[in-house]
Length: 291
Image (cartoon, rainbow, N blue to C red; front, side, top):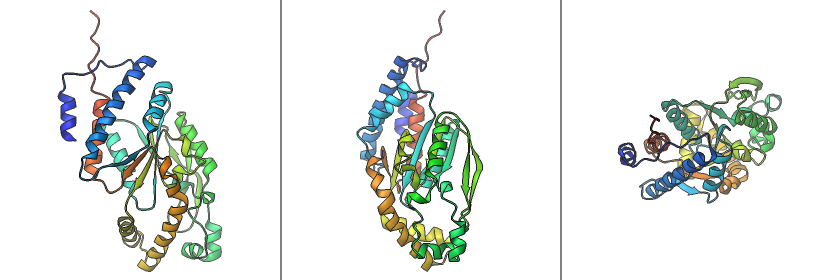
Protein backbone atom coordinates (compact mmCIF):
# COMPACT_ATOMS: atom_id res chain seq x y z
CA UNK A 1 0.00 0.00 0.00
CA UNK A 2 2.88 2.37 0.72
CA UNK A 3 4.05 1.79 -2.86
CA UNK A 4 0.64 2.83 -4.20
CA UNK A 5 0.76 6.01 -2.14
CA UNK A 6 4.27 6.84 -3.38
CA UNK A 7 3.25 6.12 -6.96
CA UNK A 8 0.30 8.47 -6.61
CA UNK A 9 2.43 11.24 -5.12
CA UNK A 10 5.14 10.91 -7.78
CA UNK A 11 2.81 10.51 -10.73
CA UNK A 12 3.13 13.04 -13.53
CA UNK A 13 -0.24 11.96 -14.92
CA UNK A 14 -2.69 13.83 -12.71
CA UNK A 15 -6.11 15.17 -13.52
CA UNK A 16 -6.82 18.89 -13.23
CA UNK A 17 -8.45 19.78 -9.94
CA UNK A 18 -12.21 19.75 -10.57
CA UNK A 19 -14.43 22.67 -9.66
CA UNK A 20 -16.25 21.09 -6.71
CA UNK A 21 -18.85 23.87 -6.72
CA UNK A 22 -20.18 22.65 -10.05
CA UNK A 23 -22.10 19.41 -10.62
CA UNK A 24 -19.88 18.49 -13.58
CA UNK A 25 -16.78 18.96 -11.41
CA UNK A 26 -18.20 16.69 -8.73
CA UNK A 27 -19.14 14.11 -11.35
CA UNK A 28 -15.53 14.08 -12.55
CA UNK A 29 -14.26 13.68 -8.98
CA UNK A 30 -16.68 10.81 -8.32
CA UNK A 31 -15.66 8.98 -11.51
CA UNK A 32 -12.02 9.38 -10.47
CA UNK A 33 -12.68 8.12 -6.92
CA UNK A 34 -14.61 5.12 -8.22
CA UNK A 35 -11.59 3.99 -10.24
CA UNK A 36 -9.31 4.42 -7.23
CA UNK A 37 -11.65 2.51 -4.94
CA UNK A 38 -11.76 -0.38 -7.40
CA UNK A 39 -7.96 -0.30 -7.45
CA UNK A 40 -7.90 -0.58 -3.65
CA UNK A 41 -10.31 -3.53 -3.70
CA UNK A 42 -8.19 -5.35 -6.28
CA UNK A 43 -5.07 -4.77 -4.18
CA UNK A 44 -6.84 -5.84 -0.98
CA UNK A 45 -7.94 -9.19 -2.43
CA UNK A 46 -4.32 -10.29 -2.71
CA UNK A 47 -3.35 -9.31 0.83
CA UNK A 48 -2.57 -12.00 3.40
CA UNK A 49 -5.21 -10.52 5.72
CA UNK A 50 -7.65 -8.46 3.59
CA UNK A 51 -9.52 -5.57 5.18
CA UNK A 52 -12.62 -5.76 2.98
CA UNK A 53 -14.67 -8.90 3.58
CA UNK A 54 -17.49 -7.70 1.36
CA UNK A 55 -18.73 -4.59 -0.47
CA UNK A 56 -22.42 -4.01 -1.15
CA UNK A 57 -22.86 -3.88 -4.95
CA UNK A 58 -25.14 -0.83 -4.62
CA UNK A 59 -22.77 1.15 -2.43
CA UNK A 60 -20.61 2.86 -5.04
CA UNK A 61 -23.58 4.05 -7.11
CA UNK A 62 -25.55 5.26 -4.10
CA UNK A 63 -22.63 7.04 -2.47
CA UNK A 64 -21.62 8.61 -5.78
CA UNK A 65 -25.08 10.14 -6.18
CA UNK A 66 -24.88 11.47 -2.63
CA UNK A 67 -21.52 13.20 -3.30
CA UNK A 68 -22.77 14.71 -6.56
CA UNK A 69 -26.23 15.86 -5.48
CA UNK A 70 -25.73 16.79 -1.82
CA UNK A 71 -22.11 17.95 -1.38
CA UNK A 72 -22.74 20.21 1.62
CA UNK A 73 -24.24 17.52 3.84
CA UNK A 74 -22.01 16.30 6.63
CA UNK A 75 -20.52 12.84 6.03
CA UNK A 76 -22.01 10.35 8.52
CA UNK A 77 -20.17 7.05 8.91
CA UNK A 78 -21.91 4.37 10.98
CA UNK A 79 -19.87 1.49 12.40
CA UNK A 80 -21.53 -1.54 13.94
CA UNK A 81 -20.72 -5.15 14.74
CA UNK A 82 -21.09 -7.67 17.52
CA UNK A 83 -19.43 -7.11 20.87
CA UNK A 84 -15.60 -7.19 20.79
CA UNK A 85 -15.59 -7.33 16.98
CA UNK A 86 -13.21 -4.38 16.82
CA UNK A 87 -15.65 -1.60 15.89
CA UNK A 88 -14.43 0.80 18.59
CA UNK A 89 -10.81 0.18 17.60
CA UNK A 90 -11.57 0.89 13.94
CA UNK A 91 -13.54 3.98 14.95
CA UNK A 92 -10.54 5.29 16.92
CA UNK A 93 -8.22 4.54 14.00
CA UNK A 94 -10.45 6.48 11.60
CA UNK A 95 -10.58 9.45 13.99
CA UNK A 96 -6.83 9.44 14.59
CA UNK A 97 -5.98 9.34 10.90
CA UNK A 98 -8.56 11.94 9.87
CA UNK A 99 -7.17 14.28 12.51
CA UNK A 100 -3.66 13.63 11.17
CA UNK A 101 -4.95 14.95 7.84
CA UNK A 102 -6.05 18.14 9.65
CA UNK A 103 -9.70 17.43 8.89
CA UNK A 104 -12.44 18.11 11.48
CA UNK A 105 -14.07 14.92 12.79
CA UNK A 106 -16.57 14.13 15.55
CA UNK A 107 -17.15 10.75 17.19
CA UNK A 108 -20.37 9.60 18.85
CA UNK A 109 -21.10 6.29 20.58
CA UNK A 110 -24.66 4.98 20.40
CA UNK A 111 -24.06 3.30 23.78
CA UNK A 112 -24.88 6.71 25.26
CA UNK A 113 -28.44 6.29 24.00
CA UNK A 114 -29.25 3.36 26.28
CA UNK A 115 -32.39 3.96 28.33
CA UNK A 116 -31.98 4.91 31.96
CA UNK A 117 -32.43 1.60 33.81
CA UNK A 118 -31.21 2.76 37.22
CA UNK A 119 -34.64 2.07 38.76
CA UNK A 120 -34.63 -1.52 37.48
CA UNK A 121 -31.04 -2.09 38.67
CA UNK A 122 -31.94 -0.91 42.16
CA UNK A 123 -35.02 -3.12 42.17
CA UNK A 124 -33.02 -6.25 41.26
CA UNK A 125 -30.02 -5.39 43.41
CA UNK A 126 -27.46 -4.93 40.63
CA UNK A 127 -26.81 -4.89 36.90
CA UNK A 128 -25.85 -8.56 36.76
CA UNK A 129 -28.95 -9.62 38.65
CA UNK A 130 -31.10 -7.66 36.21
CA UNK A 131 -29.45 -9.42 33.27
CA UNK A 132 -29.75 -12.83 34.90
CA UNK A 133 -33.47 -12.17 35.47
CA UNK A 134 -33.90 -11.99 31.68
CA UNK A 135 -33.78 -8.23 31.05
CA UNK A 136 -32.83 -7.86 27.38
CA UNK A 137 -30.17 -5.15 27.58
CA UNK A 138 -29.31 -4.89 23.87
CA UNK A 139 -32.86 -4.94 22.54
CA UNK A 140 -33.74 -1.95 20.31
CA UNK A 141 -36.47 -1.19 22.86
CA UNK A 142 -33.71 -0.45 25.40
CA UNK A 143 -32.35 2.48 23.34
CA UNK A 144 -33.55 6.05 22.93
CA UNK A 145 -33.73 5.55 19.17
CA UNK A 146 -36.02 8.52 18.45
CA UNK A 147 -33.58 10.87 20.14
CA UNK A 148 -30.64 9.19 18.38
CA UNK A 149 -32.24 9.58 14.96
CA UNK A 150 -33.13 13.22 15.56
CA UNK A 151 -29.60 13.93 16.78
CA UNK A 152 -28.06 12.27 13.72
CA UNK A 153 -30.29 14.25 11.35
CA UNK A 154 -29.29 17.48 13.08
CA UNK A 155 -25.61 16.61 12.85
CA UNK A 156 -25.96 15.77 9.16
CA UNK A 157 -27.48 19.21 8.59
CA UNK A 158 -24.66 21.05 10.34
CA UNK A 159 -26.35 21.52 13.71
CA UNK A 160 -24.41 20.82 16.92
CA UNK A 161 -26.19 18.65 19.51
CA UNK A 162 -26.14 17.80 23.18
CA UNK A 163 -26.15 14.01 23.37
CA UNK A 164 -27.12 11.93 26.40
CA UNK A 165 -24.44 10.19 28.43
CA UNK A 166 -24.91 6.66 29.75
CA UNK A 167 -22.69 6.04 32.77
CA UNK A 168 -20.66 2.80 32.31
CA UNK A 169 -20.39 2.14 36.03
CA UNK A 170 -23.16 -0.42 36.48
CA UNK A 171 -25.70 2.10 37.81
CA UNK A 172 -27.72 2.25 34.60
CA UNK A 173 -27.97 6.04 34.83
CA UNK A 174 -28.46 8.04 31.63
CA UNK A 175 -27.90 11.78 31.79
CA UNK A 176 -29.91 13.74 29.20
CA UNK A 177 -28.15 16.31 26.99
CA UNK A 178 -24.91 15.82 28.93
CA UNK A 179 -22.22 16.06 26.23
CA UNK A 180 -21.55 18.40 23.33
CA UNK A 181 -21.14 16.83 19.90
CA UNK A 182 -20.10 19.17 17.12
CA UNK A 183 -21.33 18.86 13.56
CA UNK A 184 -17.95 18.60 11.90
CA UNK A 185 -17.50 17.74 8.23
CA UNK A 186 -16.98 14.06 9.11
CA UNK A 187 -18.97 12.35 11.88
CA UNK A 188 -18.18 8.78 12.94
CA UNK A 189 -20.85 6.94 14.95
CA UNK A 190 -20.17 3.55 16.48
CA UNK A 191 -22.17 1.01 18.43
CA UNK A 192 -24.72 -1.77 17.96
CA UNK A 193 -27.59 0.71 17.54
CA UNK A 194 -26.19 2.32 14.37
CA UNK A 195 -27.92 -0.25 12.16
CA UNK A 196 -31.14 -0.66 14.09
CA UNK A 197 -33.92 -0.26 11.59
CA UNK A 198 -35.18 3.16 12.63
CA UNK A 199 -31.79 4.89 12.28
CA UNK A 200 -29.70 2.96 9.73
CA UNK A 201 -30.75 4.97 6.66
CA UNK A 202 -29.40 8.23 8.08
CA UNK A 203 -25.82 7.13 7.40
CA UNK A 204 -23.89 7.82 4.20
CA UNK A 205 -21.54 4.89 4.82
CA UNK A 206 -22.62 1.86 6.86
CA UNK A 207 -19.77 -0.34 8.08
CA UNK A 208 -20.14 -3.76 9.69
CA UNK A 209 -17.07 -5.08 11.52
CA UNK A 210 -16.79 -8.86 11.63
CA UNK A 211 -14.42 -11.05 13.63
CA UNK A 212 -14.34 -14.77 14.45
CA UNK A 213 -16.15 -15.73 17.67
CA UNK A 214 -13.09 -17.25 19.35
CA UNK A 215 -11.12 -14.01 18.90
CA UNK A 216 -14.08 -11.95 20.09
CA UNK A 217 -14.54 -14.14 23.15
CA UNK A 218 -10.88 -13.82 24.14
CA UNK A 219 -11.01 -10.05 23.71
CA UNK A 220 -14.22 -9.70 25.69
CA UNK A 221 -13.19 -11.87 28.64
CA UNK A 222 -9.80 -10.15 28.85
CA UNK A 223 -11.35 -6.69 28.73
CA UNK A 224 -14.03 -7.56 31.30
CA UNK A 225 -11.54 -9.01 33.78
CA UNK A 226 -8.57 -6.69 33.28
CA UNK A 227 -10.24 -3.36 32.53
CA UNK A 228 -13.61 -3.61 34.23
CA UNK A 229 -12.67 -5.69 37.28
CA UNK A 230 -15.27 -8.40 36.62
CA UNK A 231 -14.71 -11.95 37.76
CA UNK A 232 -14.33 -14.51 35.00
CA UNK A 233 -17.55 -16.39 35.83
CA UNK A 234 -19.66 -13.25 35.45
CA UNK A 235 -17.76 -12.21 32.31
CA UNK A 236 -18.59 -15.57 30.72
CA UNK A 237 -22.26 -15.17 31.69
CA UNK A 238 -22.37 -11.79 29.99
CA UNK A 239 -20.53 -13.15 26.95
CA UNK A 240 -23.19 -15.86 26.56
CA UNK A 241 -25.89 -13.19 26.72
CA UNK A 242 -24.08 -11.12 24.07
CA UNK A 243 -23.79 -14.10 21.72
CA UNK A 244 -27.58 -14.52 21.78
CA UNK A 245 -28.21 -10.77 21.53
CA UNK A 246 -25.83 -10.49 18.58
CA UNK A 247 -27.68 -13.20 16.70
CA UNK A 248 -31.02 -11.47 17.28
CA UNK A 249 -30.19 -7.79 16.97
CA UNK A 250 -26.89 -7.24 15.16
CA UNK A 251 -26.29 -9.99 12.61
CA UNK A 252 -29.62 -9.45 10.75
CA UNK A 253 -28.31 -6.09 9.52
CA UNK A 254 -25.03 -7.46 8.21
CA UNK A 255 -26.33 -7.77 4.66
CA UNK A 256 -27.52 -4.16 4.67
CA UNK A 257 -24.04 -2.78 5.38
CA UNK A 258 -22.13 -0.99 2.63
CA UNK A 259 -18.78 -2.37 3.74
CA UNK A 260 -18.02 -5.45 5.83
CA UNK A 261 -14.57 -5.09 7.35
CA UNK A 262 -12.27 -7.65 8.93
CA UNK A 263 -12.06 -6.66 12.59
CA UNK A 264 -8.77 -8.53 12.92
CA UNK A 265 -7.03 -6.72 10.07
CA UNK A 266 -3.68 -5.01 10.63
CA UNK A 267 -4.30 -1.46 11.82
CA UNK A 268 -1.20 -0.13 10.09
CA UNK A 269 -2.55 -1.47 6.79
CA UNK A 270 -5.94 0.09 7.56
CA UNK A 271 -4.23 3.44 8.23
CA UNK A 272 -2.37 3.16 4.91
CA UNK A 273 -5.68 2.72 3.05
CA UNK A 274 -7.08 5.86 4.72
CA UNK A 275 -3.90 7.72 3.77
CA UNK A 276 -4.25 6.54 0.18
CA UNK A 277 -7.80 7.87 -0.08
CA UNK A 278 -6.69 11.18 1.40
CA UNK A 279 -3.82 11.32 -1.10
CA UNK A 280 -5.94 10.66 -4.19
CA UNK A 281 -8.53 13.26 -3.16
CA UNK A 282 -5.88 15.95 -2.67
CA UNK A 283 -3.31 15.17 -5.36
CA UNK A 284 -4.57 17.07 -8.38
CA UNK A 285 -2.84 19.10 -11.04
CA UNK A 286 -3.64 22.69 -10.20
CA UNK A 287 -5.47 24.75 -12.82
CA UNK A 288 -2.98 27.18 -14.35
CA UNK A 289 -3.52 30.79 -13.41
CA UNK A 290 -4.75 33.08 -16.18
CA UNK A 291 -2.06 35.44 -17.49
